[in-house]
Length: 233
Image 1: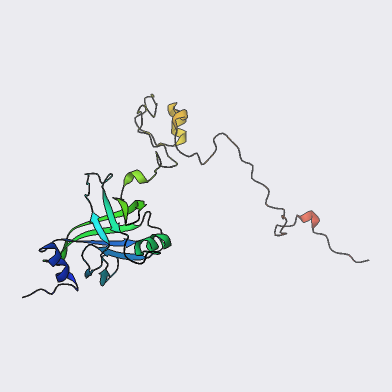
Image 2 (image 1 turned 90 degrees about the vertical axis):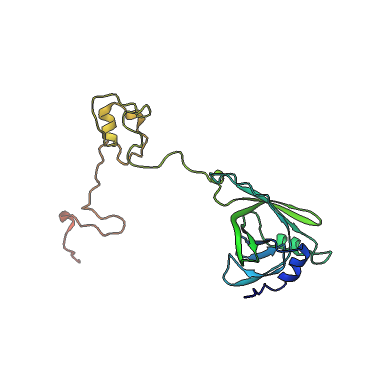
């Protein structure tokens, strides 16, 4: 059964001398705007939104892509043309002017027309935008790059997070277990190593204010000695 190619695919593939993978690039900026770029003009199934979209032939090259086992340094290069449009306001330049592409979501697919499916797919973010007169280049970074996030050195907790009798704990007594509470740190002689949040201040007596007298709102009880009948003279 013959396969129907997307609009414009057959003419573009003839220029390449055969079937080659098309580079499909779906971009979504922080303001929600979407762009669909490719190196082989045509209508393809979109990845960011549902349904088919027309992909404009603005991509000059994508890659090479570097991949690592922990994903931390996955990266690649993207180059798009900056010639379409007019001499005053070119298409790519106008898009860069009106939208923030730094950190934009970019999904790259290598689309095979023979099977009408992507051979490979990468989810990345755009960075290091470098516009020039005839082209614009981007650096594509891993979406889950752990080096881009700041995390706390330890969790915040009401109980100590050190392993009992570890060098960080410092306890040297004869006890075999620890509840990780401040009171246990006092007993084990390692109170200076307690790294949790103390919610109750130790050795401090808190005086409870009287509740029999009304405050500024007048909602408290009236003392008996003040309950005098009102006498009009």
